Length: 280
Length: 194
Image (tube, rainbow over all chains, first blue to last red):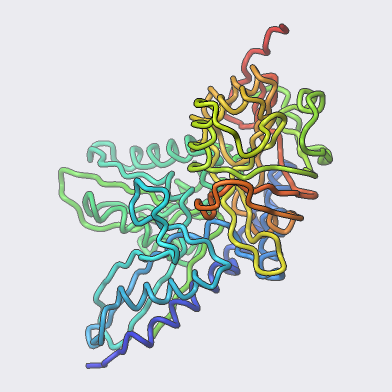
């Protein structure tokens, strides 16, 4: 067994929270540049220019990419040989609090969903998911997830007879309806199968895949291509201004499900893809 | 489809607060650069503003001609007046917007499509709905020259702030004549001149 003191985890989480709010990952920046080259509408091009300029200003002026500095979501892959001395949730929350208390990030978590005056002040608690994996290491995938794009996410419990076409139609319809609200160009995480509670989790997890890397399953990779094409044909465009860049990528993850069901979850991610990973 | 939407010619420089004639002359799709004063307010502040309007309680700023920006900024690292300051989703304020346009608000500024009632309120009261760059908080924060809390400081990021901006990018999403920039919207019939 490897004893891992939780005091080793807190500073790593704090560092990730700081980093991901100020710098857009290179693959996302490159995808925005490619979209800029493809767009023909002057308004869409101007919008993408401003988004690219935003990434430069954020780094140069040490300002967060977006004022919605997110609720922190952590997927922890815990090696089977790792033993914690203390609570992982407490260690993660301490890191989040450290980063968000410094003052340049906006605390956006309410202790009571129905009380606007119940802001916890330090953006805790984080949402933590645990998964056991072989080995003696701890891997943390950390995201700062904005509220505007999360609000446009959805879960459908389709009838199996609706099949692939039903899945595509549900997702494309949702994105058309969402329009400019979730800050397109988007990354779409799709969870296929599982059940009522696991499909959304798969969708969230799908967002952590490197941008645009296709599913290793050829059938799912083909579904990703079809959804991406159909979403980009909606004409919603960057920020809803019209254009052919509504999504940068679609990632589908599947899991076994009951034969009477076809659960489909869509997690919508805005262009400010703030994800980072650390191995401890 | 939206008819005759201006496809981004050179952005037009406009001074805030907007003069009535300027507001009426702008058409959906026009790109703008804003210079001057606006007030931030989002969910919680709107609930209070509309309650004050309903009960006749004093308002924290003069609504006549005002521009309301749907924004909950991050704090500014010294000496900056503000941190990241991009728009939040406007549709959450749809329930409050018609009453505010009626009370004299000239324009609201945010991101994304809104309820039909907001477009109708713009047409009825000569108002505008403007949008800016969702998610470009750093860029937009860098275009804010000054920021001061003028009401509800206990709401933290949701407090009402008076901002002075320069070269702040925006587009006219809904104009005062029923026009919309969004591809999925049909134009409303123009208002009958009173």
